[in-house]
Length: 261
Image (tube, rainbow, N blue to C red; front, side, top):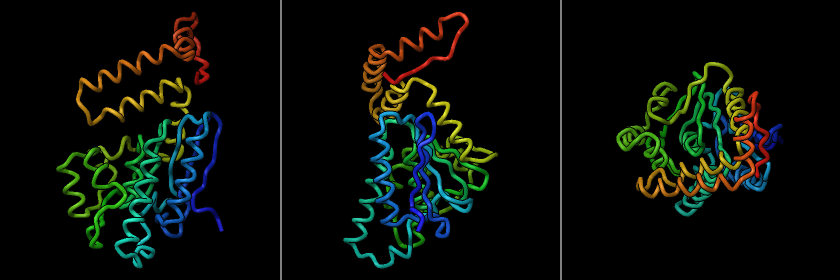
């Protein structure tokens, strides 16, 4: 049988991760979440990693949600364990030091919407559909949807989407802040292009920039500014900052050769 999560390392330190259950619309099972968690651990240990692209197999779905057939047998204890497993995997994904880019085609519903929102950048094609439809099953989101959606889209929009379970198209998701950019061509190609662009920048600076944004997004402005000052100054202890400045000032200007140090 094919692995339920595919992991490929491309040139330039770009990791491509694919949820690989196309016949089941890439629905999330315990097996998928455990495999995804293992891949995330491997990426976090790769000092040469520069960016991650996350997608789903086929055109029907990015991830259509959790596997309802598997959940049918759950009781309270099993349900809490499943939620904990999903939240842990998505939290580890969000906590990766390098940027994570979701390439979304087709359905990103329930756990799929939650998975996309755990990524830093969400690129979506014209067929993309987003939603948290759990209330239609007598459930609520369990992999972070109630928390990440309110942070991306605001409380009013998050309440409306979670309480109705309404599915929205890519244009509405873009307006809501769930999607970073709509892509008309092949979404995976666009995501790899973004990852390649990020990988060409100073690796330490990229990681510190992600850290500054995530760690202070919900805090007080003064605390965020203090953290930014400290991380900005840290850049000046790196060889990459000197290389970047030297490359910029040279005549003719040349592309910087960053080493991540």
